[in-house]
Length: 165
Ligand SMILES: *[C@@H]1O[C@H](CO)[C@@H](O)[C@H](O)[C@H]1NC(C)=O
Image (cartoon, rainbow, N blue to C red):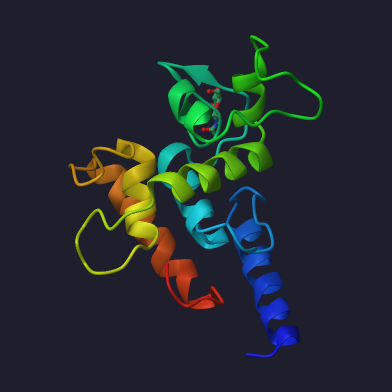
């Protein structure tokens, strides 16, 4: 696919995701970012309904419901100029869609694996790793998470330029 088409498709995917109320965590797919934009949007949808209201509760924070150890494994990214040692650094990062999305990318670079043994590492694996962690991703996912993810992927993956979830 030509670069221009590629860009157009990305733009269309972007708009569609926004139309469906998903958060604008879409970012140019770059080297070193294993998780597609559609996959990020669908994980966000499945885990929180992509609710961007600042949130921390039950050991998780933000629209991707990220734990402190997950954030730490994801490189302790912070918002501009904030020290990773700051009390608020974790909550501030994972409540920010971009900082949270980059945390996920880093986490998946470390822990990306074929959790369901289907011979590929794709969004189903990333979604399982996101929910269950890097060491338990072959475990059971709850119905609502799985169902929302699947519905979202069915809706968006055909407009994903990478043609895989
Ligand atoms: C979003 O999250 C906030 C805080 O947890 C909650 O009060 C609000 O009802 C949620 N909004 C939606 C649309 O679910």
